Image (cartoon, rainbow, N blue to C red; front, side, top):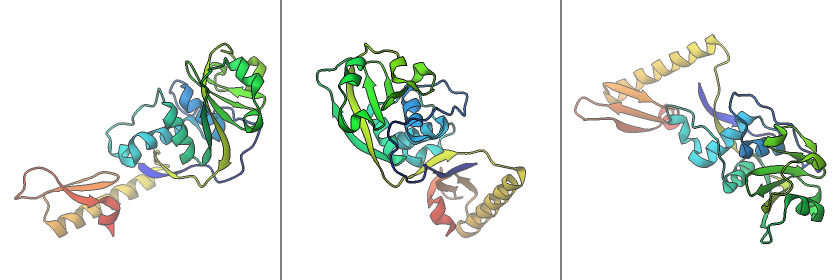
Length: 232
C-alpha cells in the first residue's frame, strides 16, 4: 500500500548535548546524509530516506514503479529534509576550512551544545556538545574524543536551534494485514466502476495521486484528475 501520511516526530524543544543512535530498519547500507538526519531527529533510516525523497521528488515519487534509492545526499537536501522533520536553525560557511579537531576546540555559543551537522571534505557528521555520530561510528553515538577523521576539513556547519511544525512525508508502508488489503482492493474496484459509469471509459488507471482513462474515441491515456478530488 502506498500512503503519504507518514508524519515526522511531534513538536518539542531542541535537546542540547544529545544525539540518537541510528535505528537501521532496512537492508540499505548506511550513508552519511541519512545517518546524520536520523541521529539528530530520532527518526529511523527509512523515515530519513523518505524525507530526502520528499525533497527531491515531492510526493510524486509514489507514482514511480520503484522506490528511488537514497545514497549520496547533497548539503542542501539535508537542510530541507531536517526542515520537513521540524528542525531549523542557521547555516554558516567556514572560509578558513579548519580541521574537525580545530573546529571542535574553537566552538562557542549554540554551536558548542546544540545538535549540528558538520559538512566535512568527504561526508557529513552529527555533533552535539560532547557526543558525535557518523557512518564511521556505524550510526552509534560516541564520545567526541573518539570521533574519527579529526584531520578532515570542515567547510560549513548547520546549527539546529529550534523546532517547528513537521510536515507530512510521503512513504510506502506495507499493509498491516490481509483484511485491509482486501478492503483496499474492493474500494479500488468500486472506484474504477464509478469512473467507467460516469465517463464511459474503456480502461482506468489509478496511481496513488492521479487517475487516467482511455475512451473509445481517444488514443492513449487521458488524465482525469487528482485521485483525491476524483473521489469527492
